[in-house]
Image (tube, rainbow over all chains, first blue to last red; front, side, top):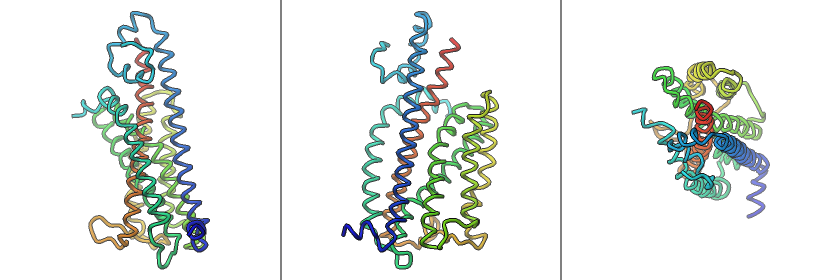
Length: 77
Length: 235
């Protein structure tokens, strides 16, 4: 059974390479986009921290900023 | 109607549904892989190489549908001047490009045992390569130009022009004599694919749709954060 699953009458090398290429492409794209997201969130947080008290109060009124900073529990809205 | 589709309303929903979608995607993918690689039967002509269809066909379908969405959203952006359309279109591009590459590469791997060659300049395959080039041009347009107005306009033009290629891809196997086989799954008439092969194909298509959706949601979050960051700078 195992032999049949991997060798597939000689087509195994084609079938498995197609599936492996697909899964590796998916994992690479997911990790790349995840990395970009973490980086952009970190940049947003650093810019947020550099705001003056007055500006910070104005920004805090926007619900979307709270949603962006949802993974950073140190921010009190 | 379009006022409801804005980052402020969509962003909280993305945060809530992402983890649920991710779990569903993993489960569907596992079921799809078991069906595709083990449970489904081999083809009486192509043998086990037919299993490549379960990744090749969904990748091709979704990359076509994704570019169609990019083209339509680009058109809506021109008509309604709503920036959110271009943000959504831009967020669709990465998964569309990767699926287009997956369709081309897995098609090439399928071609070797089936036709005896990795590549032929046949109408279907060449038009799919053209779609891949349109995806690359669309993504490059967003990254090359400095001014936001230029980025939006040029990428939208590429998106709209690229739509012309979609019916060419779809009907290339009917209009020209190609090495690529005709459609076996049809919506308007009876499909010629056996149900035992249709089931894994549909499961894998659903898994690929979920993957595209997950990538889209993450990319859209990135675009919204970038957009809101500019807002912080302007305060």
